[in-house]
Amino acid sequence: MEGAAALLRWYVDNGVDEAIGEEPIDRFAVPPATATPVAPPPAARTPTPLRPPPAPSAPPLPRAPVPLESPQLVEDARALAEGCKSLAELETAIRGFDSCALKRTAKNTVFADGSPDAPVMIVGEAPGADEDRLGKPFVGVSGQLMDRMMAAIGLTREGGFYITNILFWRPPGNRTPTLAEQGMCLAFTRRHIELVRPKVLMLAGATSVKAVLETTEGITRLRGKWTSYRLTDGTDIPTMPTFHPAYLLRTPASKRQSWQDLLAIDKKLKELGPK
Ligand code: URA
Image (cartoon, rainbow, N blue to C red; front, top):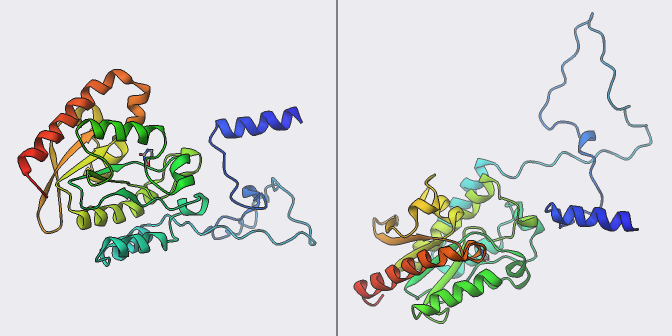
């Protein structure tokens, strides 16, 4: 029993914290999806199989899963997102989108919170366990820090800022999402930004900055410097890359820099006037 508990703890520590099927799948026994069997040349010695073939009475092997993360799915997400004419349509489309593998393990779709008419739109990374449980972005400890930071420049979720993430589903065990998972969600996030048309866009954390701005430049170089996000009609939205609050919780000395970023946002909002 102690051994089983230790094994479970090891799984959780290594990010295996979700059961996604009733039965385990022996991946070694699943035939490759696309491999065409090549007949050995007549003289070749038949290699000894690593595993004996399944006994005739064995249940059928599970079918190899179709890879969901294909460029076509990213394209489908983009077409679906572009067809959405309002935030309500976008939310419905995201909630009904079943092609992103992350959705299979998440408890909830985490869309957005705050007022879409607010001057600032914040785009974070991905829902964590608290957000997954409650279906709202930034409600855990880093979200609470984000709320306090924004309140320091007079902005709250009630009219001051609108908040979302580049991913709408929690990656199991907070693993790094695949590029295709990011691509699918990002297609919706780009439409999200188009529909909200904030006065100022704030990108919280390296993953969000890299994905939204399509850059490989690190957050430490980019944070605190205004850049712009161009909408499809050519409008440039002033955009501020900044540290993620989870990083600030681990590295409190960096809060000083984030405060400078917030002051820059406050100044920009005053320059731009009402939305
Ligand atoms: N971190 C994020 O980037 N987003 C959340 O919603 C919560 C934590």
